[in-house]
Amino acid sequence: MIALLGNLCRDVFPDRPPATGGGPYHGARALQRLGVPARIVTRCAAEDRDELLPPLVHLGTPVRFVPGTATASCAIDNDGDVRRMRLEAIGDSWAPGDLPDLPTAVRWVHVAPLARSDFPAGTLAALARRYRVSYDAQGLVRVPEVGPLRLDADFDRGLLRHISILKVAEEEAAVLGDLTELGIPEVVLTQGSLGSTVISGGHREHIPAHALDADPTGAGDAFATAYVVGRNAGFTPAGAARRATAVVASLLAE
Image (cartoon, rainbow, N blue to C red):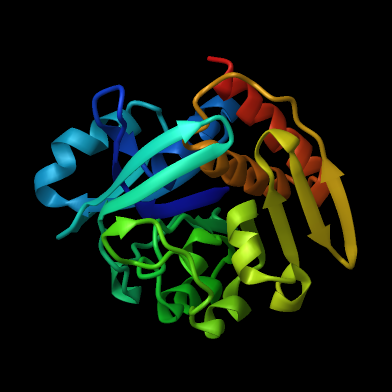
């Protein structure tokens, strides 16, 4: 079993009403498609719970809500594989004491930060003592400040030793540089409609995808979640990436 941790987000679009977003929501869409047991732990400001939590709960994976004091918000404008984003508000930072107990069957935890401040090194260390940790590189390079999204590599390098799998988007990889020098056993580079590249054990393998004319919001979160489910089930890294690619394609085709 896997667990998924992260802040909920209020996603704001230029052409439709705001919607629930963030890694827990989009990852839950993948979990619903896969039909596997899992757990989700998420948070937002208590006053926003009734707006943002029900769409996540409706997807069917059991959810543990941790009351927070701040709600993340992102303004998103997609044009194919090109995305313009503005951080409208920063969500809560998770301390080790914010982590609830998980079922004993949980082996992997996928951590889905929206900004660098979401999960400090001490919190990842607490998770890594009990679970294998998958992490989204947004939590390394996204500067936690309101305004146009800004990326840099000024992150706590102590985070890296707690991560078993790192999911990296192309724009994040451009900031991080040589991904093999991070010292992480398994890295998955997502490349939008071009597919993904798995880097593990000194080998690189490209997994192709087909371009779809659909809103890609949340595709990376869905991919990362499906990938970890595959690895937990015993798939090879390349096999898990192929399965995750198929899951994302099915979600985008809805």
